[in-house]
Amino acid sequence: MSTSESARPVAHYTPARNWMNDPNGLVFHNGRYHLFYQHNPLGSDHRNMSWGHASSPDLVSWDEHPVAIMFDEHEQIYSGSIVADTDNTSGFGDGVRTPLVAVYTSEHGIQTQCLAYSLDDGLTWTKHAGNPVLDRGSAHFRDPKVFRHGAGWVMVAVEAQERRVLLHRSDDLKNWTYLSSYGSAGPVGGVWECPDLFPLVLDGAPDDIRWVLLISLATGGVAGGSGTHYVTGAFDGVRFTPDRDLPEVPADDPRLADLDWVDGGRDCYAGVTFNGLDDSDRTFIAWMSNWDYARSVPTEPWRGAMTVARRLELVTADGRPQLRSTPVLSAGAIVESRTETIAAGKAVASDLPVAARIDLRARLDADGELIVWIAAGDPNEHVTVTCSAGAVSVDRTAATAGDFHPAFASVETVRTPGDGARVDVSIVLDEGSIEVFAAGGLRSITDLAFLGAGQRRMTVEAVGSRVVVDELVVRDLAAPS
Ligand code: FRU
Image 1: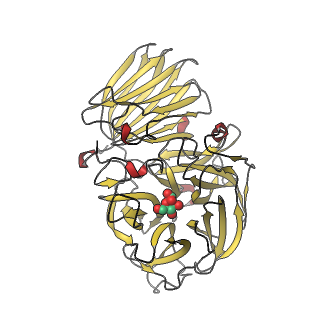
Image 2: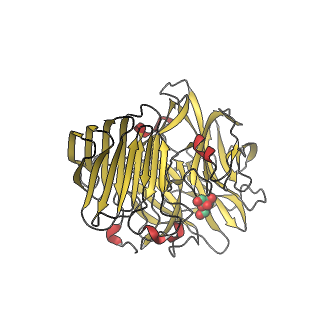
Image 3: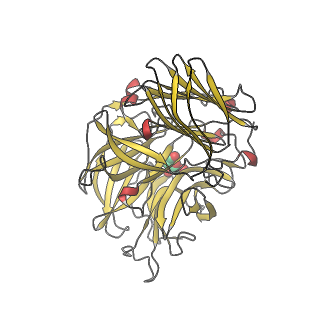
């Protein structure tokens, strides 16, 4: 099976045509959110890496623009970030317009950090004549995330194979000085990629600022294959000091579940946060795929989608700071709203729009389960979300077209902190994907999952216990509220 235009996601960004992977250069500038991304302008495989470009007024509806930074015979344009250089520290400005400066990895046998700048809000780009600006003679030094810190700029990037995050600083984005490194520690079952480092207040207390270091692993993630780990700590402008020292944990080791992960699903990778927003408005987008099978995903004429944008906060749970993510979505017209008690062994069914947000709050006994079945057309092809005391899981083993790659069929389970007998989940369903936010957003599971054409149906089933549904609200994300 290959999906067609009719199966294009509604509430997720996809390029009109061709391959897409990591989000790059996320920046809010002059009232618009800009999303650049790894893109092959010529085909639907991972080659000819260039930066595609889209922008949005609200993180929900996106306009695609011409390719921003194009590969050429000298280099591919690998992942990186963008800053608005409002003080013209780089000298790329013309005295009137603010330069946007892209810091990207040039892949040409070795990997070096290079600059390009734009004086028209990101539409057209000029490569810096003095490239590269940072060269360690390494073939695996990549994915610079640059942010303003005090009077200077800080860059976090990875030595991917050594599994090390390197910090550098600069006054002008052109001359970089080494500061320190973090790692190898925590998950080490794959190369490290696409780091990010940012402050968040803990539990909403303005004077308790913690730093969050995101590290994506191409393989060796908690759900198998690609995944994004995080560690909280302190950053003094030179060094990142983790709150806890982590053991090195290889792929498939059960101790991976004791580490912190941005998402417990299979398809939330290389995610980073926006520059240009207040620290209290920390906003994240990831590539919704997994290197295990990304090259085979059966969609056309595009291949690759982004997750919905998520606002990140830091809250104490299970005695340590943990990320909480909340999806940024259109309000969406309410198409169903009910409260109901479902007897053990019974189920209630309803129709669903293709792009839906389902908010479900319920209570069940300690040994009970609440299963949400979602199907379209053939009821034998379905995705399920199972909530039990202390855990939530997504099962896509019976989804449509799940045999496009042997590594695709999967079940992911995450433990949920808090009161196990209470279910609090939001499900974002679209063509080709499901994102589950559980325990008020302390856990999420993001999975590609295809369902056939035909009316979508949801069945909420009570297993082993009666389920008291305090709130079941379904919104149509394609319809205005
Ligand atoms: C992550 C990644 C990055 C690299 C880019 C190449 O998915 O492998 O490390 O810059 O993709 O497209």
